[in-house]
Amino acid sequence: MYNKLSSMDGWSRNILVHQIESKLYHRQGKATTNFNRTLPQAQSELAQQLLKNPYTFDFLNLGEDFLERDLERALINHIRDFLLELGIGFGYLGSQYHLEVGGEDFYIDLLFYHAHLHCYIVIDLKIEEFKPEYSGKMNFYVSAVDDLLRQPDDQPTIGMILCKSKNKVIAEYSLRDMHKQIGVSVYQLQDILPEALQGNLSTIEQLEAELETVSIMENINGLSGSDGKMEVMHYPLDEAYKRLRLQTKRTEFSLEEIRNEVTKIRSEINDNTTKDSDLI
Image (cartoon, rainbow, N blue to C red; front, side, top):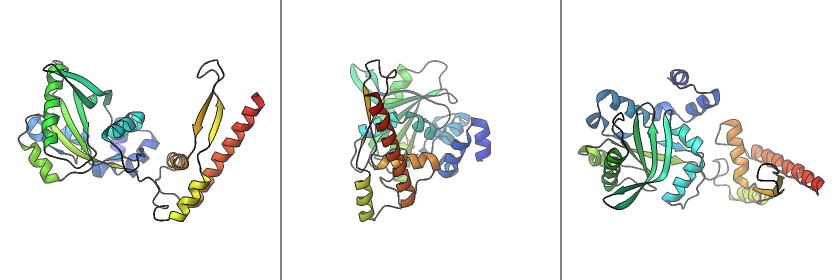
């Protein structure tokens, strides 16, 4: 399955590894939808396979208390990773996309256009469990996009509600008599700290002390203008963890691996400090 998708979508080796590790095969096509009743069969099958459950947003680090707006901003700030998780064919059109209906203003969380389905896809983000009233709101958005944005050659707009969790039975009942095509999926965020560190407070405190935020002054003359201003970059604990994830494509690391990465970061700090002192 992975080899077939890789050849069809032109995945690189790194993307292929990521999809295998994220268990794409077990998530693809698992969203709760009403596509089989609201879309033609060919369109319904393709749309169903494009939606996943759950979506894995392990590239975000939002902590425990965040708002829907925080989630939206974080996804946009990591748009490349977000598009990779959504899958091939998604084109990003905007966030808080403005629609005027009946003289009033409405804003869609995220709006996409899918190149293979030839339709708009509306995404509504929720930071709590799915509620029946969410489907009514999405039905409104899909109808508005169909009337205001959809062109004659476009297929019917699809709505996707992304929630922190869902009761599958409640979601199915909520979509049963909806005439617009809507799917409900959940998303997962990464843990704030690697599992290897969770529950080990003394170790966390030690590492946080070691990785107390420091500033690196880098000369970016020619990048941010000719005034020779310096850019400040911060390297807290999550910087070491982020680098390890990118290097190894894993999410769990030993304390030794983390400390080694800390050493590299400190070396960069020393190197850049030396370079800056030479410029004075």
